[in-house]
Structures are given as C-alpha cells and as structure tokens.
Length: 136
Image 1 (tube, rainbow, N blue to C red):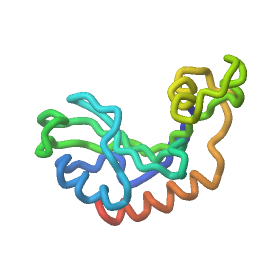
Image 2: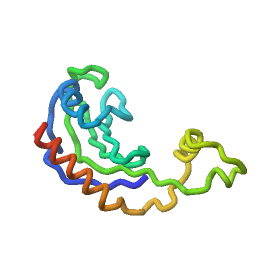
Image 3: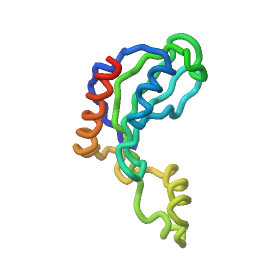
Image 4: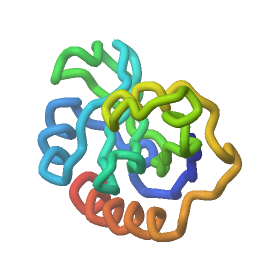
C-alpha cells in the first residue's frame, strides 16, 4: 500500500454519519474498514479497485453503527494498492483474478515507497473540491 495525504478544508469538519454518508454516496463514497469509534469513507478512483480517495472519520459522540453518530473528518489521502506481478506463476498455476486478488492482498508490495502517480492525486483533488463544496 502506498498513501499520499492531501490538504483539504474537510479536515476537522463534523456532522452526523447519516447526513455525511447520504451526501457523499452519490459521489461513490462508502463506509469502509470501520469499528465503533473510527473508520474511513472510501471512493474508488480507478476501475480495478486499486486506488481510492480515503476520508478518515473519528466518532465524537455515539457509535459508528448508528447514523446519528457525530463524526469528525480527518486529513484525506489517496490509497494505492501495489502488488508484485507474477505471483500466480510463482505458485505454479493460474489461479484466476478473484483468487489472485485475495492472495495478493497479503503479499509485500513491489515497491512500498513508490509514489502515487500524479493522475490519481489530480483526480482525488478534483473530487475533494466537489466534496468540500458539499460539506465544508
């Protein structure tokens, strides 16, 4: 995984989970990797589901399983999954894309310090401008 933070007016914005999710869902955001006190609002930036704009959220009041929970947004970032090519051939057979994705998620990235390409940062910033107008 490679991440690139992006400065945004969203950092520190508060609102209820239900209202924020309802506002951002049409843009493609979903609640991801959450527990009762924190999580992320993710929006896929590519067709393969390898690059995401991620908005960290922290619960200020309530619990994240309730749409009335008061949440605070953190600093957005672009998350890019980077996998080594050829894992299927290393284990001796073609396991198919769905299984390969499951196996690949547990391997070390090809280059853990690889930068996120500018096109993904630009796409994320464009989406953030739209979201800032909606929420900030």
